[in-house]
Image (cartoon, rainbow, N blue to C red; front, side, top):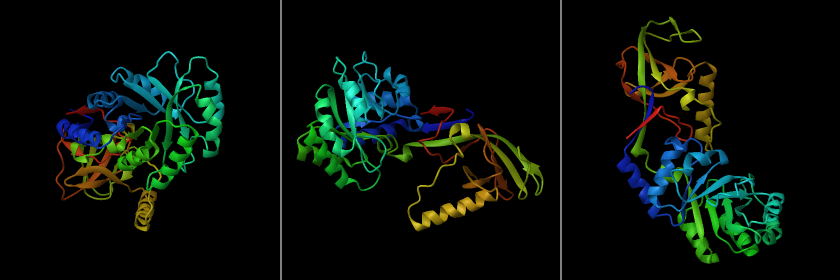
Length: 336
């Protein structure tokens, strides 16, 4: 097999999924974007196996990828007032009063979730708007309030917003980024059903159950000062240029702002940025037991890696480990 491959230990992966399901009453699996590296159809099938009655997608464009493999309700997380009225399985999210008024004017009591604004400052009705929303909600097939919180200790905010929402209109509460125990306690206190959406915490719960590999496509012996690559950079020493599958088309080598919060993380990010400015960047590919430097920035479907003399070069066709960000990874193949 050539290219990039996500190798899944299905027994271990499913054991971890079952463990999370059993510990999460009201679980709503999230299948969005690249499917957390596994692909949306696979996640939809696994949600069905888990016995979930509801799945959440990110956008309307992702509905087709899951609808045939999941028979239950499908929630669209991104605010979307135009859900097809002829598909009762689809539940849109409404985040503004004007959209809610328009939906409430419909004659067919459309089904919908209404989002409550949080400190994320992303989508949702402000708490002060919820009282005005209540009479409009009475004209809907109201699925509940959805509360999407930032990552971190959000327990106090979750409780405050849940109380405000249910005071305006008692209804199920849907949460993201709140612990299952806390969600259960909120539901018990307020006497309403609760649901917890999980993506990363479900599909990526056991990193040992999956791994990414890339195929060695070519190996070239080089001497210090010789030029290689698209940009004809000088090779930094004697060794090998190793061509491996996987590049930006696979989500490898993409840049994103750092999420550093501690001083050490920030200093590490600054150091990495300084190296990148000089044309050096450590690759995610592991050769001869350690990660090696990119010779140049990766391209769409392959990367050039410098392996110094004294190391054991791989053979063409070998598979080498690659560290990937699963929320951006697009493997060429998936294998169990």
